[in-house]
Image (cartoon, rainbow, N blue to C red):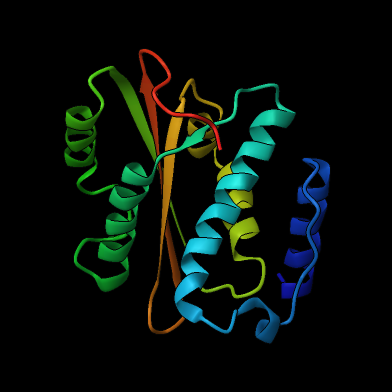
Length: 174
């Protein structure tokens, strides 16, 4: 498949779910302070997930910085090769979260890797929406979430989004 066809298909999907998106030039996609890039992409990706949930009549996920920190460590570990790409160590992450949230009743995790430059947040969400297990997490009965991104030195991006179900809501929706 050509990149142009993939880009067109991605744009059509995003329009179908009500997300406004247009490709940007590589130089426009990188802010002057590149250290801020992963954090802004984390929030952009998180917002796209919440837009999808709202469109589907699901409640918004509340951002939790502690969950995002745990997700970010997993993304870093995948990017550096400390762990393989995937869900290795998931049970340990869930145990850590159970210690943080007394009312925790469940959790899920989505991971994604790409070397795409423009539209990287939209590419992650589109891939997750087309994968039944990832979509199950996105549509799940979760209240809290955090998303951590790590950009490897070669420009590859590693995403981890962790979802948490609690007995009662413990955070305000931003």
